[in-house]
Image (cartoon, rainbow, N blue to C red; front, side):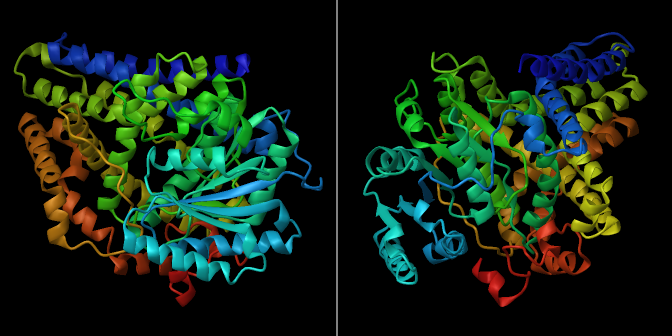
Length: 568
């Protein structure tokens, strides 16, 4: 792996050096001010993370364009015989908390039926692990499980347990199962309440685990389920082709030090039980965001953690609106920022620490970029001749940074565009191009809203605000203008104030800032529009931002707008 990691490092350094050199050339045009020095230093601080996005996507693009099985490229010594008899006994673990349990079980039913039809049902059993605390919801939950169990050919293969205390959150629930209720099983597949997996995917994971005894965890590439709601539809369209390149890239250079994303993965129970118990934070608190810590602990104990970058029937659902997205984003941020307290623990290999750092930077980049924007505004308003900036070099630096930041999506789209079969699967070249354009505008507006929200919430946490792990709303719903305004008024004011400041500084400064900040100023109408069912219907009927499952008759999902679609 050393040669691969050196190559990846060289590419990261190149992706850092070029935009920083261009930025230095732009800022030095009239001499250096304090604001300009701050801009360059902040850009240098955030550029390694942005460069990692660009480098990983570039590597992944090469992997996907190589014309070979991506798994064989990123994991050359993997053993996978799809015809080998399956002997591994695997628990399918579904974690729920205050969910519509009947809907969760409806997602699980096709998987259990397909495994029975393949003649391997006795190799699997399902375990529903509940952290629901409300008595009324718990009673409804138990009734739903009992009703579902009655429909199964082998009801003894479905188990349900609700904890009276949700100590340790989801991770604590899973570890309690592993220690006390997993006898007779060698592995578990972890699912979230919105997860959907096909039998082909589950059997592939089970065989990978069975045939590669040094591996403790295999994470699948998770993609989103079809939806007509405009926010998740556009979001998942970009994530779909973006994650494909990025995942292939990180699987290539991370190798046995791969990621865990908390669900839709298979885990070997013995090493997980022995090595993946989460440490307490120095203040005695529990870790909120458990997944990457567990992966790092497994690798630190000498076990392999692998990412299979193949799209293979592993799905999740995305938040139905901007407001739910921001709530989930803050929960994830609170969990990832806890990793600062773990970096010095002697439990991780150096790659494990790097994984934790990357998880931190996934959110820490936001206040850094916000500080760059403020410093740029101060410099633009400065009458000192030294504050002059070369616009050409500045635009070039911004463009290179943006290319690296959006490289996963751009290269993922290019990979589809260059493959006729892929273009057809995505609905044809014209529809795919229209989807790419619509999603890019959607993302360009979303990024400043999300970055501003993360920055302010991070500051609030620094002053003592505690972020809980509340249940996620999963149902599609319209967002009234008043509700959007109550939640996003300060995003709007901040965006308008920044744009007004750059407008005072001059036309060039305003035009430079407009695509970077406009989303915040438009946060309220953006939120309302992207939750509008009418827009979703128009997107579906035009085939814009459609994912391959919408064109595939063998898709595990019913057609959008059908009565059956509401049950999945």
